[in-house]
Image 1 (cartoon, rainbow, N blue to C red):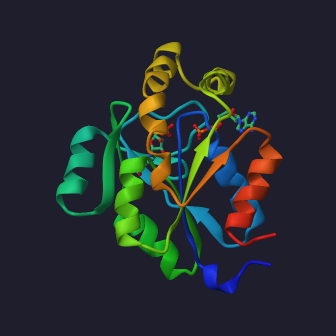
Image 2: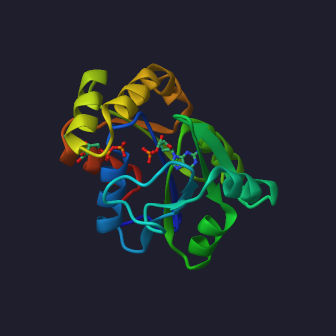
Length: 188
Ligand code: ADP
Ligand code: 5GP
């Protein structure tokens, strides 16, 4: 059973591209009732199969910076050459409804969100190794070779922040990683 003290929870997931954050987030959403992701804004173009308002709010740079300048972003960062940010509304509306909220954000955003929500649980997701991360990005078939190589060149830098997190999970066998994450959330 879910420990009532953890509900509603804010779960922050970070980690290198291809580590499995989206997959693990979806697993938590389908297991723990009333759990959802806060939809971020981004200036990167949608990937094949991504949906406006579900995966991200896709905006151009000027609109993103205007939102930021109006103070609507709880946090934002430039990641892999694009802006990404969590709006105040995207989190507050969910918390008001009593939802558990998952944030898939980078280490800069995680730091900031921890300062806003000190009880948030932060989990760093790692692939078994760098090569596997690359293989997963290739197998996902959503990014060009150029984008994959730019993400891989940031791998070491991303990885170097894992000690800032409450927990680290190596996502090797998916079912084990899901079990570990549910355990951290006191579920199951
Ligand atoms: P991220 O959101 O961290 O960039 P994804 O969740 O999109 O990563 O995962 C990248 C790819 O790897 C996806 O195609 C996903 O299905 C696959 N994947 C995720 N976890 C595992 C795993 N434990 N073993 C093998 N493939 C995985
Ligand atoms: P992707 O383009 O693969 O969806 O995301 C790239 C990176 O941006 C990932 O590390 C992801 O966690 C991060 N990211 C996504 N949304 C946000 C956000 O709102 N804020 C911050 N700081 N990072 C984000």
